[in-house]
Amino acid sequence: MRGMRDPIFMAAGICLVLLMVLPLGTMLLDLLQLGLPHLGLDFLLEAPRDAGRAGGVAPLLVSTGWILLVCMAAAVPVGLGCAVFLSEWLSPGSAASRWIGLSLDILSGVPSIVFGLFGYQVFAITLGMGFSILSGGLALACMVLPLLVRTSQQALAAVDVRYRDAGRALALTKTGMLGRVVLPSAAPGLAAAVVLATGRALGETAVLLFTAGYVMRMPDAVTDSGRALSVHIYDLAANVTGGLERASATALLLLALILLTTLGLHYSARVWQKRMLALGG
Image 1 (cartoon, rainbow, N blue to C red):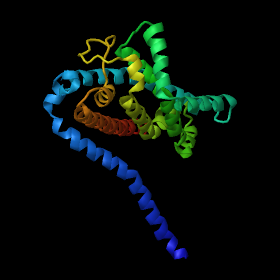
Image 2: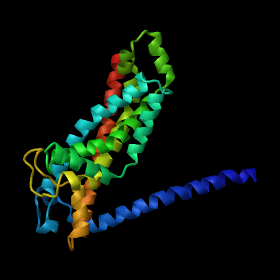
Image 3: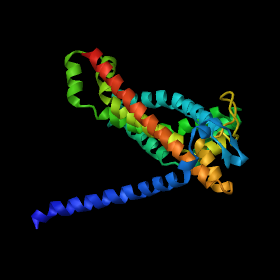
Image 4: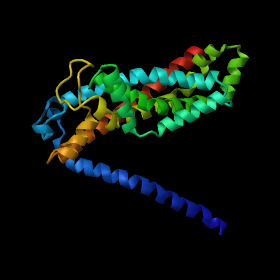
């Protein structure tokens, strides 16, 4: 019986992996069948026409890029700074650390529609930004901050304690330890945290419906309204008759953007890690 355990567990593991991969593969195949024939250079360079049934997504790409840039510019410094403070300066067992961690966990579970209402009330109305790229990006930053802080905190906590002991043996200050040892060692995990936050921001719809707006024209500034790719997918699939194929093509483009962003961030993290470790050495 003992000799049968490993094959049984192996078969169960393979079945679980297939159950996880099969829906993803089916979804991707469906998107490719519907959307791939519509992808092309014209799709990337033209503006949408006929409520999105024709033309391309050029203004939406620009709006999405600006929204993501505003979101990451606001979220990454605050999120990484908060994670560093919680991990390196605040005692992990203290009451403040536990309460902050609990608050972040609760915020991570808040539905995105609530962040949309919050962004609409605070950024669009109270601060007078209206339906704009700036409102959308800042509202998204509020939504991804808890995820970014928690995952970054875990990446910093996972740094091998021997590296910290070696830094203390070299009489490094806490700031020196952070810059020369902790951050370079945690770079892949920090990059993964930024990737998760970026992926969630790129795929978000509810927040942007209340803050960034629906306008499909090319934005001239961050104070203009702009339609993100995710909002365009929702609108084509839910409100536009005959828009499912164009929605699938836009979804494929969005997946490609997430993939390219993920690869770029991981590559940048590895390069930065090597350079910092070389300087530290």
